[in-house]
Length: 134
Image (cartoon, rainbow, N blue to C red):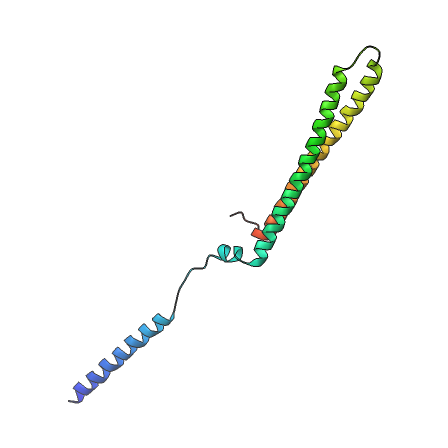
């Protein structure tokens, strides 16, 4: 009888431990958080993304305006060549030399602006997205 009681007590203790372990495991919730997705949903990320987009569009317009100006210089040079005569050859050549220098300077300015814009864009996106690309 005493043995039976001890066996019963042991069984109750084992069952109690079993249920306690199950309750502890049930309280422990394991999940996965996509930090990038959460980060992208923040207002700060959205604001920064909008600012980047605005900056990119602004620089794109600036470069397009420079290219348009460059094309005007090109047309002006072509027009001068078409209308060149023996009487105005020296004057036309001087003007063409001047236009060529302006043209080259504008090309260099466009290249510098493009490179600078790309560098600034990379710096800003690195600050927003972190040093590693998605």
